[in-house]
Image 1 (cartoon, rainbow, N blue to C red):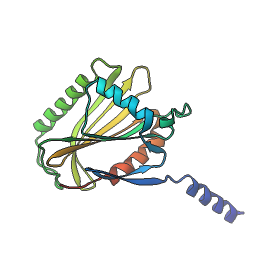
Image 2: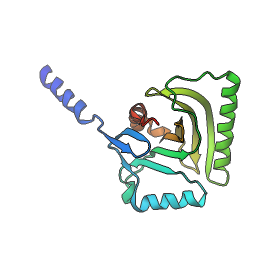
Image 3: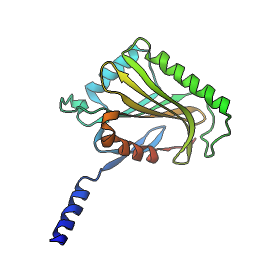
Image 4: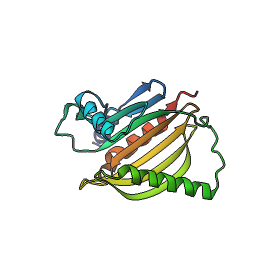
Length: 204
């Protein structure tokens, strides 16, 4: 009896294990994403792009992963999660492998700048900044990034946790945004952590 129970538990464990797909993104690098998310496309992407353009929010490159079914406007999708990779071209620092020295005051100024940027970006929209957790210098997959974390709300919707990682890479800057509805943390948090740790930039 004990042997049968053990086999059953092993089968259940294997059946619910998350599956991932590795995507290669031109001019950026690669990332592994849970199969519970899909690459944003079709009419849904056109709708989102139209809104961003109306807000004068433009990026040289923008890739979005969202819950599977949204592209088909599936009404059964009732969970919020996003992985967004954006690239801007310009003059930036190299992609460091060592965390640069930064003073407490410089870090405080950085956090203040990031917070003000969010407040300005949310102005005139239904977005509200609920909590701002500050900006820090972190290492992701041996790549240095500026991490900014906060929670926000859209209208009367449930609060969303957002973590943004900015990677400078000489002639471009990549931003990796991971967000999920806080009440859905058990569904998305671990999967987004996997994607974060898999993110690899093609160094310039």
